[in-house]
Image (cartoon, rainbow, N blue to C red; front, top):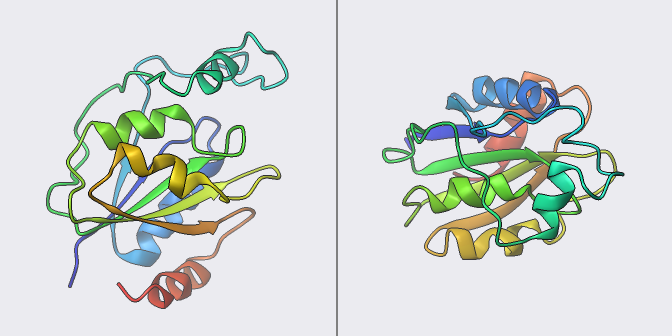
Amino acid sequence: MSKKLVAYFSASGTTAAVAKTLAEAADAGLYEIKPQTPYTRADLNWQNQKSRSSVEMNDKSFRPPLADRDAPVEDCDTIFLGFPIWWYTAPTIINTFLESYNFSGKTIILFATSGGSGLDRTASDLKASAPDAVIRKGKLLNGRQTKEALAAWVSSLSL
């Protein structure tokens, strides 16, 4: 049986709620990806081009520092990686996370929450940050997700 981890970044709590239910459904560990400096409401204002999130997302090379590097990824075969969609892709802190650990030979399954965008190019956008991992597109998990529905999704993945 493979060891699984649900690692997630959540700026407002929406992705956190889904991640916690997914960890239960997948019988997986749970790890929150935290920025060294938490995001404020003003930082997340995507309509302000000078907001922190807008500035970060406009510079694809920017890597927000992590609060810690304690994710238990070493012994895991499968990592469910969750985040809100920002500017049609993953926030740059997800690149920081992927570049901070060795994901060689691991399967990373993406999941996200979004106000309107999908996961379309996210897997390809993240590939350079974890070149030796298999990154699977996964699923958009908006709205209230039940443990049963998420368990069905996990079992359909053939892990």
